[in-house]
Image 1 (cartoon, protein in one colour):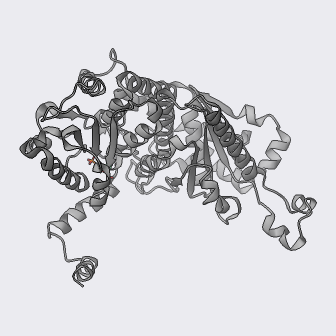
Image 2 (image 1 turned 90 degrees about the horizontal axis):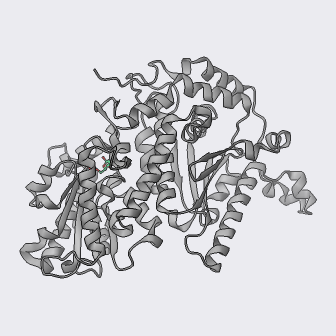
Image 3 (image 1 turned 120 degrees about the vertical axis):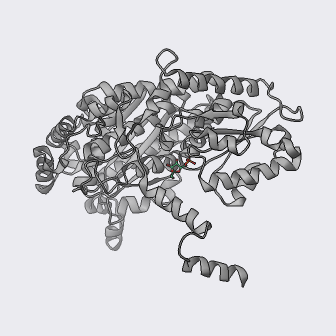
Length: 530
Ligand code: F6P
C-alpha cells in the first residue's frame, strides 16, 4: 500500500492557520524598522543554531502572530513526520511510487544498507589509489586527471563540492567537469590533459541523457586518439542503469551504481560524488556525509519551532504564498561558494516548480519561487540595485563564512570585509534610508527621491563558522530539507520532475525524426546552409 500523503490531503489553504496568515497580511504588517524598534533583541531571539550554522531570521517580516500561525501550519501538515518518513525510506515520491533514499547515503557504515557501503568502499579504494599515485592507465601512466561528464544532478552537486573544498584537495590531481552537449565545453574540459593519465567518468543516473552520451562519444574519440582500442578502459560509469553502461562496453568493474530511488539533485552523497572523494579523500568525504547526516537528523526530529530547515521553509511559504514574492536571491559572501546558486536552482526549482498536488488537484497557492543569485560582493555591483530600489521585493539569503579556510593575514582581512559587506547589505535592505535621513546628509532636494531607499526588504543571514567538508555538507542538507519541507507544507511532490522529462523526450523525437517537422529547425538548417 503506497502511503504518499504524509501530509493531510486537503489544500493547506483550507486550514484556519492559513486563513490567519492571510488575515495578518491583509491587516498590514509592521515594517522591519518598527519590528526592530519595538524589539531590539530580535536579532538574537530569531537566531537559530543548526549544527555549526547560525541562521538569523530577524530581517524577515515575522512577528509572534505570524510565527505562531506558520509553526501551527507545519504542525498541521506534519512536516516533521514527512521528513522522518523520508529519512526512514518510506514511499514519499508518489508519482514514481518509491522512497527518496538520499539520506541513506549519508548513514555511517553500521547503519547504511550494505549495497551503499559496498559502493562507498569501492569508491574509496579507487580514490585512495589515485591519490597515492598507484592507479595506472592502459599504457602504465599514473592517473592524474579525472573528467566527469554529466548534467543537472550528475554535475551541479559534485562541481559545487569540488570547487568549494579546493583548499582540502590533493594538489596533484586535476578534476574537471563537462555538462553541456556543446563541443566547446568538452574541449575546454579536456584541454591540456593527456589521455594516458586521464579517467573519464560518464555520470548519468538514467544513462539515456543525450547531453552526457554525446559528450561520452566525444571523450571516447579523444581517448582513442591517445590510447586506440584501450580508450574504453579509461571510462568509468556512475549510473542506476548498469546494463546500459555495459552495453556501451564499460567494464563491470568500472561501473559504480547509484540507487534508483536517489533523485539526481539529491545524489551528491552517492557515487555521483566520486570526483569529490578523489579530490578531498575518503575521510574528508565521510566528514561531508557526517555533516549532512547531522542536519538530516535535526530536521527529522526537532519540533517545528526549533527546526531550522522547517523554519526556513515556512519563511519561504510566507514570502511566496502570502506576500507574493515570486523569487528568492541567494548570495554567498564566499568565492568558494560561487557554484552554490546554480546547484540550488536545480534543487529548488526542479523540486518545487510543480503545478499539481500529490492528491492530483491544482495547487490553490503559488508553489516554488524562482531562485537565482551570485556571490557577494560581485552581486552588489550587478543586481543589488534592483533588489534595493527596484519595484519588486525580492527576499535574499545572505550566506557568510566567518573564518577563511586559509589562515593568513590577507585571507582574514578579506573574510572580514566580506562579513562587513554582508551585514551592511542586510541592514540597508531592511532599514533603507528615508527622505529625511537623506536630506539630513545635505543632499540636494532634486536628488532626494533618487537617494531614498525604501528598505523593508527581507533577508535571512546564514553564517558558517568556516567552510569545511562538514559545514558544506550541513549547508547542502539544510537547503535540501528546507526544500522538502516547503513541498510538504504545500502538498506537492519534491522528488519527481516530469516537466523536464517532456523536453528530453521531445528533443530525442526530433533528433530521431519521429516528431512533426519543426519550423525552428527548418530555419536553423537554412541559416547553416546560407
Ligand atoms: O534535468 C532533468 C534531469 O532528469 C535531472 O533531474 C537529472 O539530474 C538530470 O536530468 C540528469 O539526468 P541523468 O543523471 O539521468 O543523466
